[in-house]
Length: 418
Image 1: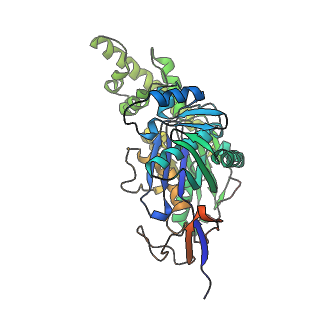
Image 2 (image 1 turned 90 degrees about the vertical axis):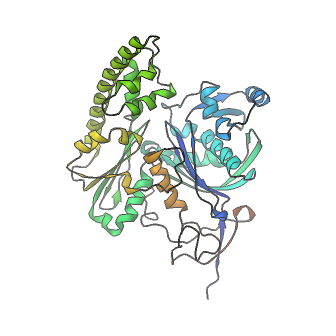
Image 3 (image 1 turned 120 degrees about the vertical axis):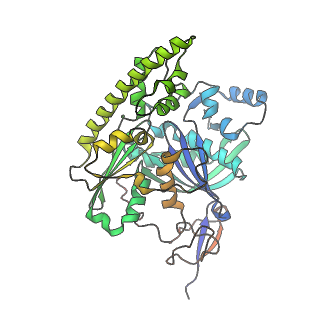
């Protein structure tokens, strides 16, 4: 009889998508077999002084959720993160910077919020998986070095946190959904040419798998932000940073309904508001059309001509769904790779926008990927029969030994050159 493997399970597992419109994270505490938690935060970051955050802590009042009062101190720098950055410090989402540049304070901030929400200690071990634009995927090692250094000790509203990063993985945006689809197709992936088109707020990205071989992905600036820039230039008084803007545009739908846009008007009289809403509707129709044409023009240069299937995903893809379905009517289109969101997970109505990070979470941290106590069965399903018998102890108590549990098909073969 073989000796059981000793497996260290981290205190927290976290998959995170540093999106341009929302930071989306899914986390759980492996040793508790707890239900995964979805955390969404505004994307804004603001550099602030230590004196400013001290004053904020002295003067704030009321019961405030941690995600709305988040700041972190890293080395000599302080950053307001999310809601606090947007509403108090005039932060912005830094869409023109590399995501890697703002990733560290966002991840530190998310870890503090999760520590508060999940009642964890201020000393943690964490396994982390993060999505990056394909154009920034080569920066993953630099990001890991920064994270390991910064997480060792950083300040928060409740004091110092010390986090040990025991495992780190980065995949290109769309990679979670691709790996999920690959696990469904199994060996048949070698008989197909598959394109994953991820359309987000900041970027449009493409991953192409040819007979099971995945080429390096590509990104462009043709995310939803491109259309918003064009739209606000056509309209008087609108600013891209207005948090109502995106909601109104989505509510206006394919027909660019002026009634949904009327709430953006700053006119006083009802007649002027109605007139301006109609003008905004016409402007949005032009911006939407020009954006879609620019997007598919770029995609035509990046997608293979002999696609067997195209996977369309991301919040912007959902917004453009009618046009995309017509344009790609001659190809088998699979929305979000067939990923289904776990019932009860999406507590804030994100819908398909969390499909990629949810798939990433399943690939890296799903049942069978982290061996838990009583590995013969779990509350969420059976562990693979190929999983190793294991003795489990908290990662903070000793050296981490990687589990040899069976991963979903495609996980181990995911090429590092992506």
